Image (cartoon, rainbow, N blue to C red; front, side):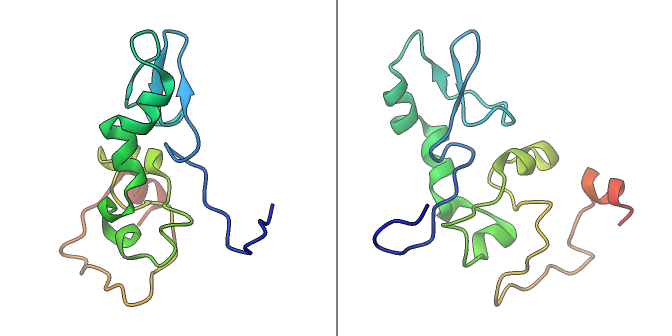
Length: 124
């Protein structure tokens, strides 16, 4: 849905306009990112969403690493923090399934890059 200003829509993902509440009241940035930000039984939902270190870091695109940190679309897209976490253990790592190469980004040499589960599954 376009707004009256005509800007591109912001992505809704992993802690940006979206959250998941478990049956036990645990608050997660998404149903696929198993990092808890707090519990709704002990703290107001708005407080967790606005102030928890996890949610704040996920909204801070300056903390994105790799291609995502260099990408000119990081404010719109931001990549999947859940996929980054699943494959690297770091929610701020680059989106492992993105094929886009940001303008001016220098791909690390093969000697520097490390294999991930995704690379093995894809036969790379």
